[in-house]
Image (cartoon, rainbow, N blue to C red; front, side, top):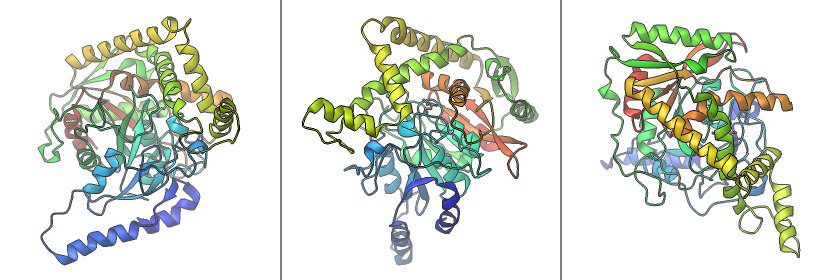
Length: 449
Ligand code: GLN
């Protein structure tokens, strides 16, 4: 993996920081094996893991993709990182992202642009674009990403890998830099459902440092318990296959549906009437929460500081020079939505829409075992910075953001290719389940792909 990384990283830029102690950590595991003392090795022993750079690591910088945290080194490991290290995983480095997770292309990083391994002129998706491109190019075995509104699933789809957004509360958020706390989850990317299942088991579980993290009510994933698909009820979400979806994506999804039927699934269309409302609700809620969460970056406590004798000038100068344009726009939007005269019109209404969405998912999942949709309405975009383009990626996140508003688990698996790049561009299928039903997901998809 290290030699792959050295070979491909100059073209890909998946990593903001590569660890200088990977070989030493691998050697320690080799030594343990050589000693043969009977000491049990963890399930991730020697596994090379990429960690999105908005997840804190004590021994490496953690920037959140933002210049405001350039050279920042947290004094602790995030719980997910601590757990993966305890199980023998080796953190190979910190992967690139859109600044603080805000974006869908990874072009919004304050440091570098990451390329899609399938076509170097295209984006890997985002915001966990570095984590997806690193796994896709086999620079590491698995990686951690974060998903507030699709940031694990859309890059997984664009890079042709498996990406899991777990149920909200399954994996501790302690040490994940907060974007929108009621939506943020840490997720996993890998090249197979089995790898992602093993990785999820390793990092999930109760953590007293995250008040929204559930007690271990859920079963851990046992891939050996894989069950036949015959009779499984699958709901294809009608609203995700409208005119805005590329024809190549539609064909790949249709082929996947046929394949599922051949395997015995009963596939029916299902309508979620409030689906389209998810996009405005998401952007109001995510911006509002981020305007509050990002107030901690004031130039006093972390990272970049503009020196001034006057306190307000110090805050303003540090924030003006440290944050990029997308982050500034979200802070302004969120502050506006939360301000006294507008709270009821925007924030409160968005919360009401969120309840409607959660209920419509519940109704659909009462009669279906899982719901499916395209993971994104298109394949990976060409690298671009036009403002119109920005609007198009905002709209295309509709298929993903509803799942975060409802807090449900969703798994993306590659399900076909459309023409493009040198060998075609991957299409992803999204499978959405009831809360804490990741076990069912892994049973289904490990047979399916
Ligand atoms: N496109 C979403 C946004 O910009 C992605 C967020 C995420 O999941 N981190 O908010």
